[in-house]
Image: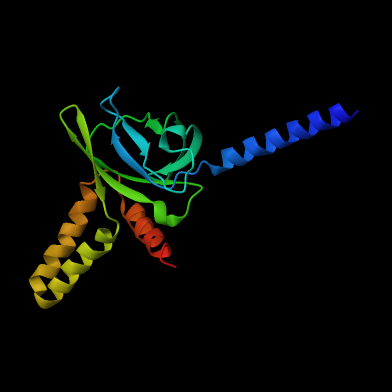
Length: 179
């Protein structure tokens, strides 16, 4: 009876320690790059994490991400996951882990040159600073204000991946990260 109790206790301890280890896997920092196997897709790479005990190469499993407002379950293996949606032209990618806070949202401009993709990180504060700069400059020069508004409208007409609604949503979530 005593051996049965000890084996039950050992099994109970192992199951809780495995569950605790699964909960410790958290993606706090990541980056985007072109996938080596398929040049028209991108990969999400987990960056180094100081508070992670296992290291980057031990991030395995399924994690929920929001990519351009669409929830996707990405399968990580050794700290890397492939986004299987093919990118046909240059576009913006707004990506964040769903389980995390707003401070981990990132915006990338994926530039397609020939058959290669280049991911360029766009700091989110630029989405607020650049239009603000044009409006302040336009205040001093009235004609420039009209040109700035026209450039802003043309930007959204010829842009793929970042609509006005997504643009305002990204700025709203970025401002919430400071609260």
